[in-house]
Length: 384
Image 1 (tube, one colour):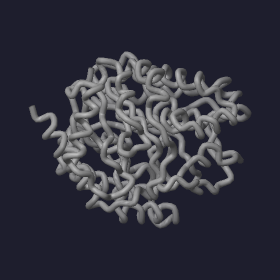
Image 2 (cartoon, helix red, strand yellow; image 1 turned 180 degrees about the horizontal axis):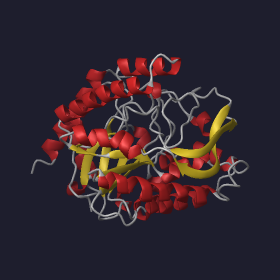
Image 3 (tube, helix red, strand yellow; image 1 turned 120 degrees about the vertical axis):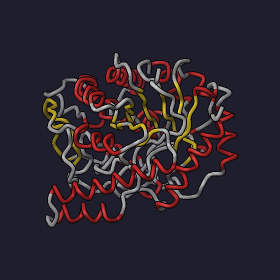
Image 4 (cartoon, one colour; image 1 turned 45 degrees about the vertical axis):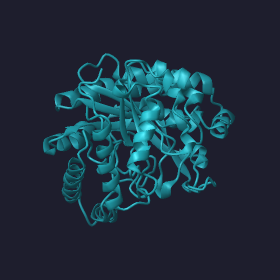
């Protein structure tokens, strides 16, 4: 079970301040060096720490402000300036694939991918950067509140395996995903613990993005995926990443897509995956689940969550700045408690505020208000 219950949680990313985005542009243009960018990032992370601690959250992150994207292990785009912690991939000509499934806020098809290449694993993985030393250590050194590291789950990396380009390095996608799990279990988590960390969150939007939406699932099947087999395999492999790790909270976050402009990827409740996935996530203490819109369905699938696991309800949206009504948020928590006992519940936003540099369409003041509301409601609901 978790080391300590966190009631007011946060998913991870925060809006990038304008000066940080300008510094990244300068870095790309060659007018700012590594040391200069690092100093700007340090300032931004300090401000992110202050923001979250003022809001009263029980756990905080560095806002993922040192990353081009939440997908930090292998970059999605070539133009990024953050060196990935893993090597072994190449950008190769490919069609948009899963990128073609993104939706605008109104549900129409979003045109988010115009590049001719995508990254695929082509060689055995090699660790080339210590993400704990480069990102988490600074957060831990400057925070007074409990901290956590967020990182993509092994299962998410399935998009980087290609039947033609990857087979020589890893004959099956499951072998590749297992290598990612080994990296997390043997290289990341021990360093996190050594640095004083006791909370790790694996981000796995793939479960909801690819499996709950019937159109998305059909698209993956057309691309040659055995979705039923992959669903169960992914859960077992994600377990491997944190299996046997004691003394830390092991969490997994599942959402339906979070892109600039309030874009999303999937429509459908957890019922389609809950019976297969939730009981299989035996190595995880905590599930962070998106529940901010009707697209996420009702709370009844929570009946499949293991009786020793906690559920963090992502009831506040990060896709726009309108502030939720505190009474309605509390009422929804009470509704969820019909399926999972209240002591095993917690509250957060449904996802981060800026999964990529561009961020979602809300202001820093609106972001602050939502973080404060998470704490306000959590304190009221679980004050006893």
